[in-house]
Amino acid sequence: MTIANIALLLLALLAVARGQQEVGRGRRKNFEVMVPMSDGVELHTKIYFPRDSTSKTNDGKFPCVLDRSPYGYGDMEEFMNIFLPFGFVSIGQDMRGTEKSDGNWNMFLDEAGDSLDMGNWIVQQDWSNGEVYTFGMSADGMGSIQTIENAPSWLKGQYVGWAPSRIYNVLFPHGAYKQKTTEDWVTDLDMANESWLPSLLQTIHENENHSDEFWGQVEMSDEKLANVDFPNAIWAGWYDIFQAETLALFDGYNEKRRETKLVVDPVGHCLEAQTFWTQDVVYGRTGLALAQAFEVFGIMDLKRTNIKNITYYLMSSNDTAGEEAGQYWSTTEEWPKHSPTSYYLHAGGVASTQSVVGGEDESTTYLYDPADPVPTVGGNNLPHSIGGSIPCGPLDQNEVDDRDDVLVFETEVMEDALYLTGPLLANLFVSSDAIDTDFSVKISDVYPTGEALIISDQTFRMRWRENGDAPDMIVNGTVYNIEVNVWNTSYAVAPGHALRFTVSSSNYPRFSVNPNNGLLLADPEYPGKNVTAMNTLHHSEEYKSKFILPVVEKPKRVRVLKELESMGISDEMVEVFATRLGN
Ligand SMILES: *[C@@H]1O[C@H](CO)[C@@H](O)[C@H](O)[C@H]1NC(C)=O
Ligand SMILES: *[C@@H]1O[C@H](CO)[C@@H](O)[C@H](O)[C@H]1NC(C)=O
Ligand SMILES: *[C@@H]1O[C@H](CO)[C@@H](O)[C@H](O)[C@H]1NC(C)=O
Ligand SMILES: *[C@@H]1O[C@H](CO)[C@@H](O)[C@H](O)[C@H]1NC(C)=O
Ligand SMILES: *[C@@H]1O[C@H](CO)[C@@H](O)[C@H](O)[C@H]1NC(C)=O
Ligand SMILES: *[C@@H]1O[C@H](CO)[C@@H](O)[C@H](O)[C@H]1NC(C)=O
Ligand SMILES: *[C@@H]1O[C@H](CO)[C@@H](O)[C@H](O)[C@H]1NC(C)=O
Image (cartoon, rainbow, N blue to C red; front, side, top):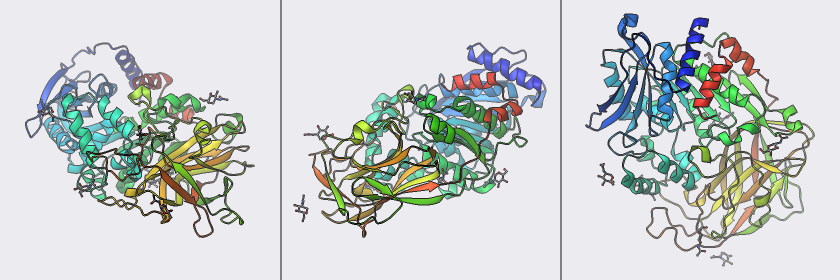
């Protein structure tokens, strides 16, 4: 990129940031249009032209960048005009059933077809050079990835941020319903037809099983992913609501070409927590995202920098020990190899790499009353600033961990830093006297001060333990072995710190309360009568319950700001981009 280009970009970005009207000489007139889809439903669309778009440049034909959104033009769609200075036509479209578009919004079920119709329309316009790129964050990204289903030949590149590969796994991880987030989210969409909302929620409730018939329609199957044969880059966040599934999207998008770039920042949607991370988080993440989007759209080439395929933030505590052990960016060709290391749970609240300690109680039973669930305190939630209602990020768990229905296990205090990067698992042996119940797990960093800040958590709903089409209730007293995917992390446990693992049966409102009566969400009787359960965690020689952590060598540090500078990504550009992202 030349200095002149950079200056031009900067001016354009600043102009856009001040909300000024784009009035370049020789610019075609921007316009709004209702574009008909193949079923006749019309979608509201805004089209912006670059400077000199009436001239002979490119024969007056341009590539186009498209953002289809359910949030309306004031939100992410408008973002597209950062690409105008580089000769792109930028297009924002309201998804079917949202904002000013017609029709009803349908959990992304219509996005493969609508994006195909839209792209086909674009390339028929006299200003199109036949190339379409997509840009999409969050719901926009969830829609944009549906485009690959039909493998349109005009699709030349995609930039996707904070979007899950399999929607089911973020709304119903292990069958446990993320009711509050789901309802906050769909209620926050600019739904064109409000009376559609109850039937949308009903559809979600009716599909609490992972049926291929329903969820398979919007999931990134190997077959769909085989169509990803164009430049692309992905942005994920460790405390993001979609974390593990955005990482899975990276795996899928990278499968064929092996050229996908990935950035994993600490927060994703969880903007509330960004001050917790002390090394260049806002500048690092927005700068890298900007650079990688530019690369995908052919605007710049990152190969000459030290930024490799995967760039991620190694998190740690925000005390001095944590800042010495971690809290920096690392960049690598592929994920570091990790050694899965088991921490066995023992009576007396001990977690140890020793599988047998001897002379202990073989199980612990606690009473779980659905009327009095364990409250959620932080973690991977949709925060207030973007339409959610549950605080997110690394918050102190002591107040909830002190409850009688939360079993707490701690490691010894670390003498040396323990580096983790990869998947977190809990492999538990459990039983209950109810026909259905939940097991909730959590991993926290215990500070020398006694605070215990959450790293990750998940909940496992027993009736869906086989992940089948039909629920499978449990039998009083039978011991079940469950494996809970506690998502991923990159975290340095600093010297002087310990790890805490907890097991309980609720985490509300992050997950819906299980009334233990086996009623399904769509049952007219739901939630029905609360059933108090006596739940048991086994930790005997026969039933070794454990957490499995991804231990790695200390990751190498990269000075992200220095790399951004060498790419020509200036502070001012990042500033504008960051402001537009709500940072
Ligand atoms: C709005 O949704 C309701 C409920 O599904 C439906 O009956 C109605 O036809 C919809 N209205 C429009 C204008 O699409
Ligand atoms: C990393 O990227 C390079 C260059 O794009 C590619 O050749 C390589 O295969 C990638 N590595 C992995 C593990 O995907
Ligand atoms: C660490 O973060 C917490 C929560 O955001 C904050 O209250 C505390 O002051 C921070 N500590 C340091 C040393 O910055
Ligand atoms: C049953 O549990 C739910 C969820 O915690 C609660 O809202 C409700 O009040 C409880 N019902 C009774 C009768 O205690
Ligand atoms: C994290 O999770 C994904 C899938 O959920 C997995 O494919 C990936 O390799 C994991 N590793 C890291 C380091 O995040
Ligand atoms: C579960 O089984 C135990 C042991 O057989 C028995 O004492 C208890 O009453 C049963 N509980 C329920 C709710 O059926
Ligand atoms: C589960 O999936 C099937 C489709 O395979 C669907 O017909 C059924 O209603 C679903 N059942 C439940 C209990 O959600």
